[in-house]
Image (cartoon, rainbow, N blue to C red; front, side, top):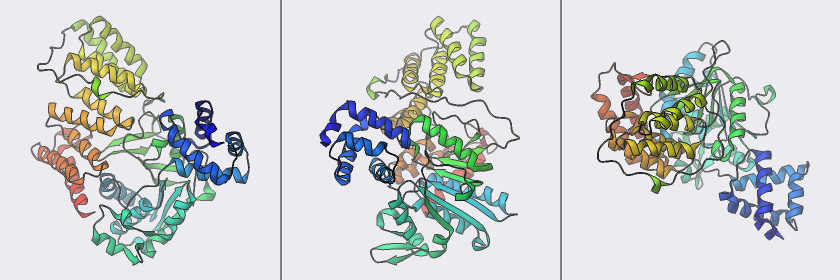
Length: 487
């Protein structure tokens, strides 16, 4: 009977089979969802028991492949809507797409890929953006490819008819301009349907680049909110295949923090106020230092374990003899040599337990090695030494985002802002976090706070971590807010 699967001895190997076959990471905390999905599918497949259903999944038959597709549908979600993550679409509109258009204007050709496109709102949003950026849109050779593992989602995408849920946060004017009323739904204009092609694609098991399927020579790959379902090893393999599918100088955009824990040695990270974008390095360019190693299963950070903010900062111990050791550790960290940097920091922290910088360097190295639980402990030790330092709170926020704990991520970033109220990057990042939860008014308020700070800075002043001047970031945030209000 299906109750056989309630036994952890059966669920554990099945979750491993799911991981190996699809790349989907089903942790023990999600076994209830796995069990529910299996219950549903066993009834539909008329499998009399656990062993028979497992045998069906393990077989190499058409029936097995069909069953895998049905099971995956129940383990993932197809929730999306037009211009989801307005910060990233602002970045596409004002930075990424104009740059690609300029680079490709001689050949008048663009190749964009929405990987994991669900029901098609994202690739159609790309088509609308391009139409607004290119007056001669019809004269360009434009491929916008949408792929997904779920054929039912793709059928809906091909029909191009959407209900109100797909337009939440989208201005009525945009819907009237690019869609026609069809019964209870809205149908996208035919010229956009002609520009977008949909096909089934499995990112973990699929073969790409592939000349026969158009997945090659891409200028832009969007793959957002897909890696949250994948184990780190599968995510790393897909990133490598994305690099193969992109042309030199092409861009990869993922969901916020989804590249954490994944090696980035074929990409150059470009930090913008809205998001991080990854530009593929050309074959002629030297590779940057290795970035993050594959992390183990992260240990959760408990909010109650956070120390209170100290009333007064504990003075940093003055140990001139450790300065060169710390400088060497920082240099190793900046070169991507996290283990040697960790060892250097550990020696200092052992000799001088009250050394804030040593504990914080340990935390940064551990986080970049994927050891999030240990990184959190090092952050807490650093905060016990100096509770008025915002940097450990920022790192704890990033770790919480990687772990999917966005409530804790917001809490930690709010503490960082309390301690450093003039940090532009913190306001912009917190704005992106609250926008993710649908709190658009609060997001705009935070971004306007960043705007106010930027307006008081010298335009030519460099602004970390953006590798841009204050004036450039100011212009960027103004455009972002304008886009937020219009889309």
